[in-house]
Amino acid sequence: MAAKKSSGRRKYGKAASKRVESAMRRRKKGTLKSGRSGRIVKSRKQAIAIGLSEARKQGAKVPRKRTGPKSSVGGKESR
Image (cartoon, rainbow, N blue to C red; front, side, top):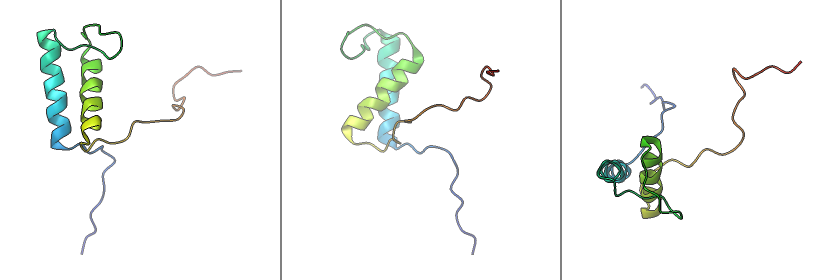
């Protein structure tokens, strides 16, 4: 009996995928706008973030946002 090995990959639900897909289409069309400012989104990364945020609000399966300090690998060394 082999135990299932959980990979370190993040798991997203189908609903989350649909929201991101929708956000990407709206970005391409030029109708995707950011939150408070209402500016038109041109960045691909920002479109994905908006799609995931919308999915979270709907209650779709989306992993939690990363919090805490980032690791300083490859940064400048202090002497």
